[in-house]
Length: 186
Image (cartoon, rainbow, N blue to C red):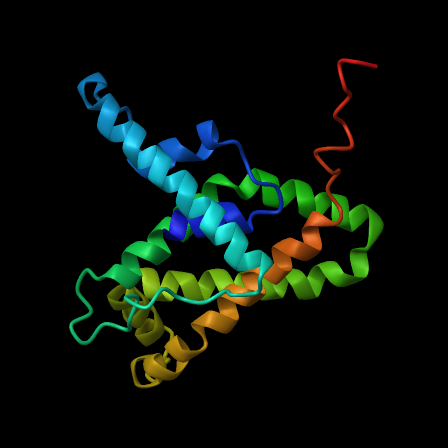
């Protein structure tokens, strides 16, 4: 679902043929075509649901994505965040295109939005691999991360909203997909 969230939040949503393979992480055995079709259909329904949630301003973590307890082993929140980061990395070209378009028209806002996005991605990375984040924080002398983890977790919904809002501001600088469509009947 994190992957689908990132796709839905992208400044320009790619075609399903682009992002669905990311969910399968490689080639799919032809004997599994029916299962893949069912998963793809479910993913498209989830995308539609996520887009509606974003349109309606209902951006939040799904209820089962709770902060795990020590030792922070593999957990649903980490999988969700890894999916979001995986999709974001695949969508980097789209994000870069939007940044470049914004720079040419409204460079004064870019720096703040880039800081917001960096903060979001850092936070997502923290919850994608909490043990690694704690290790990195300790190396940098930040011994308070584990103590503050629950408080930071509480701000995740706001961070998700910031991620979507940042993308939404970038959308304004990309050409509208429908502007370039020319009817065959003309």
